[in-house]
Picture 1 (cartoon, rainbow, N blue to C red):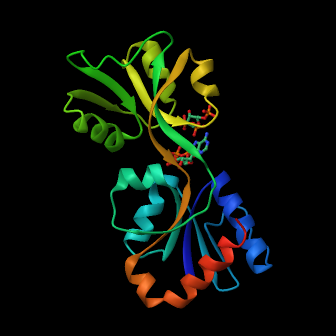
Picture 2: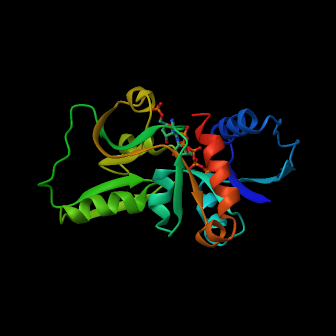
Length: 202
Ligand SMILES: Nc1ncnc2c1ncn2[C@@H]1O[C@H](COP(=O)(O)OP(=O)(O)OP(=O)(O)O)[C@@H](O)[C@H]1O
Ligand SMILES: O=P(O)(O)OC[C@H]1O[C@H](OP(=O)(O)OP(=O)(O)O)[C@H](O)[C@@H]1O
């Protein structure tokens, strides 16, 4: 049996479609149930940000999560396979017509991706104030909560509709299948078989 933590929403749905194609079974969470057990798999329905936590503690053998979230958590987990889903980038959002002013004494940045933003500026030896938000990040510069933002960009439409321009990219992200190290050694054959079957669906 393999336990797999899936992030609620679109990525979980698309991942389960790949499992259906790979194993010829229908995988659907019933109503409000958070566990789906079928055909040797136990899927857990968890919050996106919590996926690496379940895998790190061994409550799930595997998980599906965006690289951006994994970078934020800084856990020592195995990245088994790029599922090529949820492709996006983590980039700056700047007020239209403004540029990142690296000479300013201190920039204030609003973001959900606190550590990624912090590392970016540490590498440039720049002092920044980071304001952690949990959503609607694009709002922050519009009401002067921050000078700019660091956020997920897919089409760029959210920034555009909120008077922001997409600035420099910090990293590219897509959903990856991640594995707990102990599980990998204890269930290596099962996990490698799963990897091969899912890879065939990409
Ligand atoms: N517009 C998008 N296009 C593609 N991928 C995205 C997009 N928005 C988010 N993602 C990817 O999906 C992941 C989950 O995004 P989402 O915004 O649903 O998470 P969240 O609000 O942080 O989750 P939760 O509130 O459950 O913790 C992101 O970390 C990113 O990897
Ligand atoms: O470039 P786009 O195609 O417009 O997509 C990017 C938007 O998608 C995500 O938001 P989400 O819908 O998850 O909302 P939240 O971050 O406010 O929770 C992200 O935080 C951006 O706001």
